[in-house]
Length: 291
Length: 344
Image: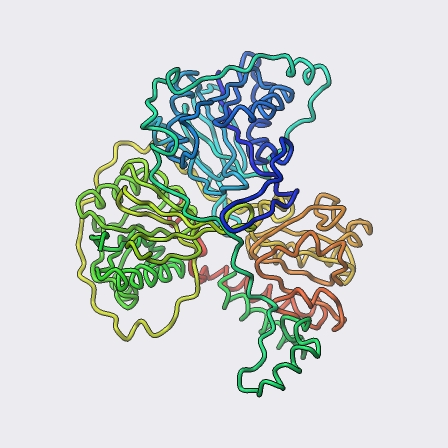
């Protein structure tokens, strides 16, 4: 059995990237990136399948610049058998469809029976690529997978898909297939020193546009439909903002602000007998469509 | 104007009802259609009846496409993809909007591939730029940045849209929509089979994955006290969590701990029960979209974060709520509760 695991490097949000109008400044050092958490979980699931079925081959795939190589080495350290970096200047600036096109060619080249990916990257967070990959390959794709079991015949896989309100759909899906895992499904094992050292010396294959049989018009910015026009700081959350009553005079409004109105609590306390409080809670949840 | 073609909303009807998300989607489609000087239309997946048509009409749908009489099963994404793709090819809308339900999230990227067009997912706002292109804003980098994307050439322009409260008053201009029955393309044997629907276990569901987290602290009082929280979490489709005090007391296992020495969560709803809200706890939950706090101490710092601050005893407040939810669940009267209508 061959398993392809699609991984991507993402801006490490734990390092609080600075968002300015027009750009996201990730401090631009190699370690201001990390391997996407959901992809790590996908790799772990692949390794667990291999633990059970020796002879399984796990390949880590990534589309990105040469700087992505350390992250593929991390995958090798954790236990992937081989790693392929899909790297070409032409791939730059691609949207999800262009990226999925590159991945689909690579997966077909590998002849993988099962493709595992994280449901979405923490930076772009579109969650589209796995489904588009499945569609391009002409195989089923299931997103939001929280549990997967390979059948004994290795012909299909039983997955639990996360739905709304804590429900899960139990789905039987024939292979080959693309499965996109929720981030918290499993945590990537800690690499052994020996594997880690070996990974440093391992050869990472590089496949470019020509090797994949793609033309530069189909990939990267030229092959994309969606363009990012602008990146900027998000609109502030409305919660807790103090706005003085516009009916008041300027002086009174000013006083309301300087008297500490700004640090005032977001919502008033609700007090009363328990039945009333319960009623209040129930209607609050209903109003916000949480039940 | 560079956009021709209508603005479409892909609505989902569940047990003959339009989900709230679909209503807000239709309203947004109508608003954009107004701006673009074109008409708004809806495609209904799932079951559909007259009441649902009126609901769509009242939000501004001029035409409603209904695939086949029986409706399209919502748990068959393959068929849904085929229908939407086919309809778009035949009628050439300029804009197609989807919700952010699990079906829409699965459907929209695949339709985009078949049509060879772009898609902006989880948009928080849509507007029309001076060039007539749809400006789609969405959050990225874990909410730290907001991106504006456009789809300059490929058509239709497509987006999945986060639900938002619907402004009332639109119904006044509502019309009876023209209903167009379309033949659902018959699908060969579906590739994936949905075998059933299960409820995730509130005790074991991973904290990071849950959309609803019910957390307890010292105020819960005992291991038994947490049973009520588990019950509430199950009814809300979420999971239970705890502050350090409750974990140290052995009321809940350590993997349930939220805060500095535990996990960090950002669910849609966080219910803090009997948690005072010291910073060691709040760093783990302050990103939650909606926070409800229940505490007997009216000066507890958790109330400063809360969207709803209830001063009272956890057990006394939650018992009636749990009872009412259980009742509602038994009647299955809550709209949009079942994600699939007929699990096979």
